[in-house]
Amino acid sequence: MDTERLIGWTEGAGDAIAALAHALAAVPRAVGERLAYTLIAPGSTMSLPALALSLAAFAIAVAHRRRGRGVPLRVLRRVLFPRRLLGTASGRTDAWFALTGVTITGVAIGWTLLSAELVRAGVQPWLGAPVGAWLPNWAAAAIATLVLYVAYEFAYFVDHWLMHRVAWLWHFHKVHHQAESLSLLTNYRVHPVDTIVFANLLALVLGVTQALLTVVLGRGASPLAIGGTNLLVLVFATVLTHLQHSHLWITFGPRWGRWLLAPAHHQIHHSDDPRHHNRNMGDVLAIFDRMFGTFWMPAPVREVTRFGVDDGTPDPHGVRAALLDPFVASARTLVPGDRARGRARGKALRATAR
Image (cartoon, rainbow, N blue to C red; front, side):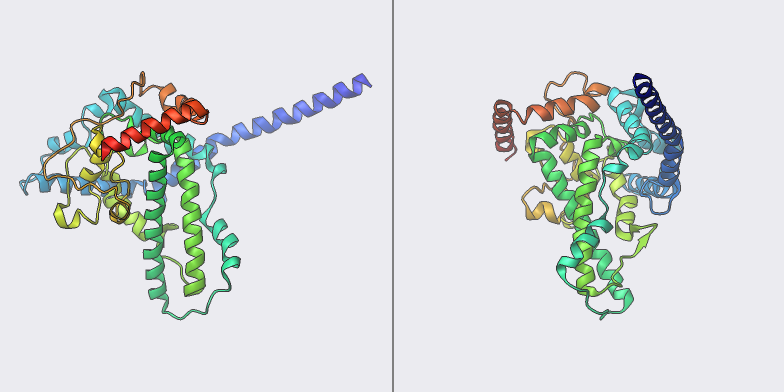
């Protein structure tokens, strides 16, 4: 009997080892596919063509600041790739997140995500049968594109608001704010848990919105998209979102600056000045910040002197602070005593911000 058990255990262990080996062998292929999609797929906001257009928009912004005098290549190189990009601990951490975010992290957290289509399929039966198509296809597509883009912006704002206001979420989002200098790579400095929460919240909001559109406009209400990505999301990501972490003080003036968030708006958001805390939480549209009282109009000249989080975190750009410490700090917020102290600190911070 003991021999039979040993044989069974050995066979079971062998199957487990074989399954693990198969899974590990699939990792390089999955990483390669993820990298290829990110850099080549038309619907990827980080594709090489999209990034090239973003750099072109950045160059145009630099030229505008120079009042049409042209941009020598050496000036553009210093602006796009400043020495601090890889010459500081903060910049190197941004680059590390950028590299792993488009490869390993994307593969590792894929199984944790909902999809908007899954949510739509679950919600729509509760809303009733779709009406017959009553608009031309182009009109329904235009409405769906705009409505779903606004829904995307709303999900972004809600997620960002929660990250700043909910203590255990803040410790994961804080990794992004620990950047002490902003560059085009800071956009990728995001903790995996931060990514997971946003992606699932976005799927919920977009799925419910798509279900409502289907019921109201009919089954033909599909948004204009490129490679499965909403056209407006792709356009704004290319010409503006990638530039939000620019170190240049770029504003859109008193008129457009009340509706669109320029890089200067986002520098306000990253400022370590208590007056600027919890401000400008939207992605591109300023409407939700204005609706919920978190909007801050940047001055024509730079008003931010420092970025980062001044909370005494040792080595804020190390692997421990960037990946592991947020789990410990978040867990502590669930302990009654620590939670009360966290609420007191948050209340004092909000009072200072006002």
